[in-house]
Length: 371
Ligand SMILES: *Cc1c(COP(=O)(O)O)cnc(C)c1O
Image (cartoon, rainbow, N blue to C red; front, side, top):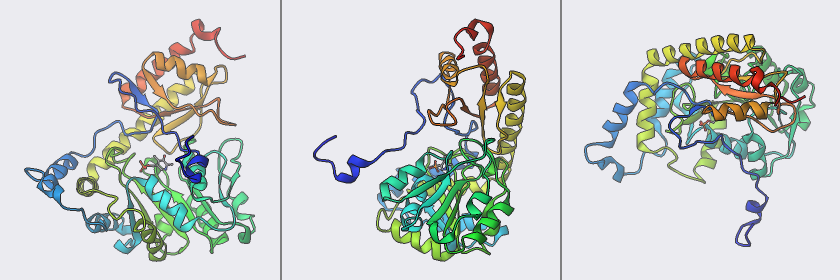
């Protein structure tokens, strides 16, 4: 606490990202990064953009990201997406920050699940947005009726990831359609950070629903967490609102190398399809093996599994894994403090995780288990 700090800084409760340790030998399954490298064309495109002496860096990048917007619109042409329906940000976290400010700050509470992406309440605090947490069902499924029953006059907006994080559970498109119809005057944001690993995209509904905004990222399914690219798709009315906030904050959120790399990633559809299929296959195999070890595994449509062992304390399991150089995510939070979220790695990393867990729950460790 410092007297130099503004009041808003004193009151902030910042988001805590999963750690990025310096140790090279670690098996890192704590932040849902993709275990495979980006498409080979990405690095080539970044080199080409840089130019021989990095000369291109003298100049500001395109503030609108026009070429990348066009590439995203073209990529999603099956949903008739146009350039004017695309908003870009420095990672989808930045997109979401602008969404909260531009579209979700109203004088009624924003609704989101009690177990969901931890950044949502942080943005609410930053922008002074009131919110209400709607409890998920016992099995972590989202009961859409809980949102449909709400008096629309008392709802400021709705946001949740699909598939949800950190549970991995996906919601069907019919439920989202019903939600859009129940609250036509409020913005509904579907955060599709993990949609490519097995959920249905709500992009199919953008054309019919002016209150829908879908956000996606290059961080997970395109192996580009380090490049920082996220985007939102919605009707131009919503996008124009977002551009107003963006242009009041930073005109150039995406640098030249990022824009070039992202375009190249979209161009290699075969690589994308292959890597995401491999990850989905590894996820199913991992789920089967963890089930054999006695873990309860929440059905996942994402690149991670949300697991719990009835006989073992999650804090302890996470500690044992770390001793074996594997890091996973543990949330010290009501309802889920007995769970671990484990990212799906390469087949080798998954095998290492299974052996480590098998060792951690072996009789030698049993005495340390929680009662
Ligand atoms: C990872 C993640 C994001 C943010 O991704 P960026 O790296 O900022 O693009 C957004 N929402 C959810 C639910 C995520 O898990």
